[in-house]
Every structure is written in C-alpha cells, then in structure tokens.
Image (tube, rainbow, N blue to C red; front, side):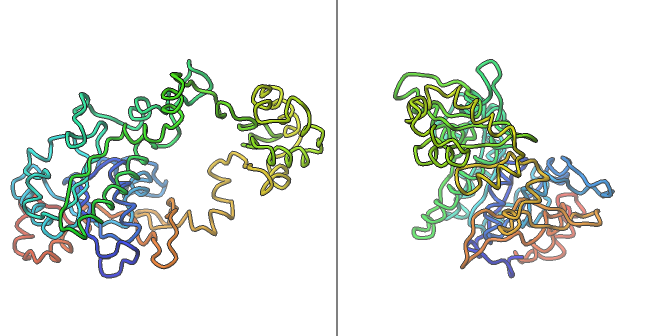
Length: 409
C-alpha cells in the first residue's frame, strides 16, 4: 500500500496505537487521504474486532462492521507491548514515522517507555497525538484525567445531551458515536496542523485532544445562551430556540424535516402550499411573529404535509425550500445523491461471499482525491511486510514470532 497509495497525504507514515472508535476514526481519515497508517495491535487484537454486526455467512468473524467502518486503508502489525522486546520494536518503528496516535489511559504508554517524552528523543520531529475522555496534562490537567469515557459520557458532560430530546426530563444522546467521531475529526485536524509545523521546523509536539472538550466546542448554543444571557438552554425537540419554521412534521407515510425561518423561504413555502395569504398574515409576517406563534405555525404546516407522502413532498418542496424526508438506512442506500458522491463504496468482507458497503470519503479533492482503497486489515496481516520495510531481518522476525512477541498471518 505505501507504494501505491495516492492522495494529499501520500508519503506520511502514521503509527496507530488506538482502539475502539475515536482514535481509529482519526487515523482512518489520514489513511483515506493517502497516509500509510500502521495499526499496531495487541496480540489478541483491537477489541472492536469482536463487535458486530456480522454477515450471516461469515464463519471466520475476523472483524465486524464497526471495525470495518473505522479501520479501512490501514495495515496491521500485532505486537505484545507488555514485553520489553515488543516495546523496543515499536521504538524502532517510531524512528521512521511522522506521527503516532494513541488513546490509552493517561500515563499507560509512559510506563512502557513509549510516551512522548521518550519517543521525541528518538524522533524530534514526531507528532504525538492522544485522544482521551478528559485529555492529558499537556493541555491542562483535568481533575477527571484518569476517568474512563465513552461516547455517551462525552456527550453528557460536553453539553449535547442537555439540549437534545423533547424536554429536560428526557435527555437523549445524538445518534451514532459522535462523542467518539467528532473528537476523531479534531484529532486528525490537530495532527495535520502539528505536522505542518514540523514540516517547516523539524520540531514535533504533543497534540492533546479531550473527547469532552470536542463536544463542548460543538455546543455553540449552550455556550452562547449562557455567556450572553445567563440561561442554561434545555431540549426543544428538533427546533432551535427563536427560530420558526424549523423542525419536523408528519407526512402521510412518515416524518419530514423542513426549515423556512427567513422571509423569502417562508414566502416560497406559502406559495407551494397554495396559501399566499399567510405571507402577510400578522401571525406569520415576520421572523419574530412566526416564533411567537410557532405552535399554530407547526399545526398548519403539518396539516398540509399530513395529506401527502414523503415522495410527494420531496417532489413539491425539494430544491425550493430546505427540506428532506427523514431517511432510514434503506432509503439512504437507494438515494442517487449518495451513489453519485461515492459515499457507499464496497469493500471485501473476509469470510463473506459478497462485499459490504462502508461510509465513503466526504472530503472531495479532485487533484489529490482520497479513496477507500482496501478493506480493514486482518490481525497481523502485514507484520512481516512492515518489519521487512524497516530492514529487520527474517531471523529476528521469526524469533519474535516464536516467542509470542509478534503475531503474523
């Protein structure tokens, strides 16, 4: 892969000591755009390999759908980091790497002589990125630094859950693992910002990313409402405080999202609904009046929508006012937008007779395009290949394999 990869980041080598979702998602973004990402796994493998979903005909179960979705375009080497020789081997790999990404608990890799202070002596230009629930001491030592965290913890403390849901008594996390993937995005950006600096100065640095910080950084409503008005906003369903029409209404066969808060959008919607008189109706004639009369506004628009199917509303409103049916997975896979944008590419699924779809590369660069080039790796699939690139002799490789310090396919 290093010889054939294309993309803006071709030529970069990233050591990926991450597991679960946040860290692997970060390194996958870099891999999608051409970086050679070497996934350094424990002998038993990243525990995410054992997470589903699995194909019914997959008897091998080398990995499931969650692992496939955040580890494509990578190579895998399996190393026992608890063994001194395994630790020494990783330090050798660092000498030829541009960056290292990890998401262990704070201090774990320091105890293995694989922390930043040790590794920067071997590779002064190394960019060292950590993704933790509450960060590391570099960015300010949180009283929660040693606390474990998952997606829901980051969403709860970072502000999202407090404003998501129908009301304050029923907070709800945002669907999917955004408490992991949003930090992964920030970590990828931070890694590249630090690599840009290292490119011109030869000086690496520690990139400290806290999952909870990343969610707060995306909680503009929480911060602005409290900072400007001393108000802690509460959940308001699918709307935005002060903005109407903005939310969801029921169609004949499901629910659709619609937003027409500004005067030109509202006027166009009134025309499409056949009710031009509502444009000058005092209840709806301004953005403020529409908010003050939002309950009535919602009722009359839903009355209109409820007599039509999602497809009929899409044909009528699509492209004219901000509108979309709320898609389920089947509808996403059918929609031509995602096909033409190559957002559901297929890759091999080991053990299954047919390929599987994974989320595509959303950033389109026509001159140096990113791509889904290959499936997620099998555990230790590239162990020998990678070590040979580092000119580590076959005898030493076989000795480490025999001792159980390495695993290879």
